[in-house]
Amino acid sequence: MENYMEAHKYYLDSQESKVIFSFKGRFSQEILTELGSMIRTSLQAETKIKKIFGVFIEISQNILYYSDEREVGPRGDEGGVGVVLFRESSSDYMLSSGNLVLIEKIPSMKEKIEKVNSMNKEQLKEYYQQQLRKERPETSKGAGVGLIDIARKIDSPLYYQFIPVNEKYSFYTMSILFKKEG
Image (tube, rainbow, N blue to C red; front, top):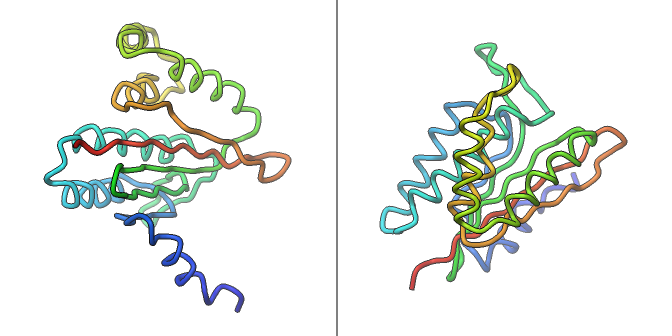
């Protein structure tokens, strides 16, 4: 049993920041509700709570709807599998997510992320409005504004990475920082 020290390693790795929660598994609306409650409880005094909560919902829904690793729940509902980590340090909060994506999707995803990373707040607002007015494909599960909405709520770029897993999949990670006030 090689992994018997995992909890200790996780504990040591977490010394510099407080882990508010971490979740790995099949995402569902019930999971989003529970984790969202943890954010609200943990950040009651934080002025950026609405922004943090909104970004959490977006990244979690991206996993729920778009992860290429899927599982069926006990009631027959299918959801994407992934991971979300929410940490707090003395200077900021960090939301990180990760899930499997088909390698063929990476160029399109990179293009979308780089586009929103290159825009200022005013350009993001305009782009958001344009996307809302656009016709949506039948396969779309939303308005296609998730990344734009995230970028509008944060003060730094979207940090992302694609880590090859095999010839078919990569593991897509995104991290978002929220600077604490004061």
